[in-house]
Image (cartoon, rainbow over all chains, first blue to last red; front, side, top):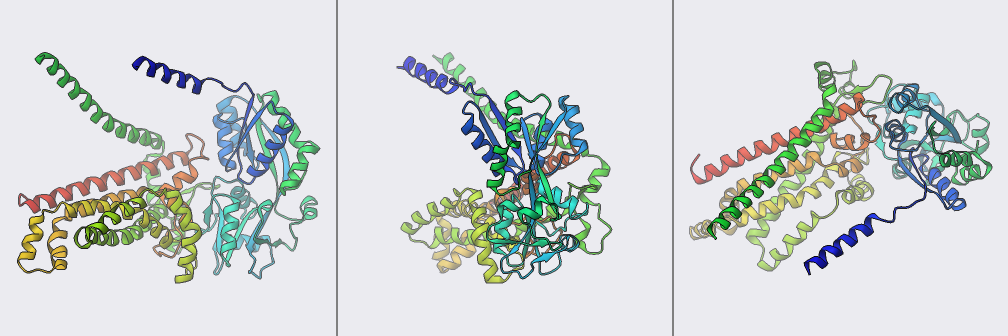
Length: 259
Length: 307
């Protein structure tokens, strides 16, 4: 009766606690721009190597880098390069060096609603729009934890502030959804997500595959993996695979540009 | 036998007292933790930056800026506080009159069968997760409002406030309705006996008698509105703008904490600023609840003639 219930409860408890997986595990966190790419990488790699478990999370490049500094993640995905200060923080907090790997090329596309007649903007015009919010433009952007936000701020705004009226949304998909619903909307994000909106030309150059790879499209960036020098051999193998021809084929499938 | 009972009594007293104190201790510890994390930035210069410092710009809008990720971080709380107040204002504007009217209808005018139906249905509203309400406001409500009123910005204070009002409605309704129902029957009977109509009775006798409860429901709704995160994060547009115009997008203190706490490095000024916001929210809620309690106490005393 009472003893039986106690034994049953203990049995349930031990069943819940036991059976821990012996498979090595890699945790990845960071850029929302890269989250789909990261997940595809992980899926393809796990198909070929069933003996390993890889977990991928978003949250923004800033979140991933902060996690790398705090030591709560194995690999950080970032759509912007790590700052010197951040690398120094890793050294100070964890006593290890940061290892940077470029895994793909991305074009930062500027999206407008399909009904919008604008087809081309210069970088200066784009910066003016995002600094002064002239009517009738309604500005959509990313939150400040995003690498895309930082990249846009550094390379398009040249360090100036976004206008206070820029609405901060949580992910390129959210930005595109907002622009698709708003005929005066303008937004920015990774080119892989464009659906239902139009990606305009910048300085007269369209964001096509050729233009991005040969560098004529002015706002393109690398997508990075950041790990530490004490990374496990499984993680190092994974990073190597992602930059191999097999991994780069995944990049192409997702919609980014291989190195 | 007597001694056993005595011991059990003492034991249970201790247990209940401990349980009561545990709740208080938890709240105190949470406050202390939040405050401690905010402490590094808690000196005169930073307080000045959070609440007073203005950029040298012409328009009101450009003077108070929240842009912490920048070569020159700008960490003014003013746009965020304003955003929180705007959303709370619209939410209360929607929820308070409708909630009290619904409670009045339910307790005074509705036939018993209808009352049995209304009360659980409105309380069901309370069960909708706020993220679902936020999602609904983001996708559907914003489009409706924009086509009905022609707003420039799809996600604005009206949209967020309306969705917030839907979340506040059950709070106001439940507590007001309980208050109205517990007004003694004798009040109603006396009023009707003196020749007043049902409406006059409800409006001039029952409602004033239930004012402490109605006011308590407003205070609770206010506390809920100030702290509400998900709805305002999704439906408000998240633009930290110092503007009194309700057609503009807004960004609240709680939404800022939710969106930005994930990326900060522990110990950064940005991190401390976010915890400062948490402390601020805590203090606002505490002060509003305490003030509310005091006012309710006064109302009750006045009602009973002991003030």
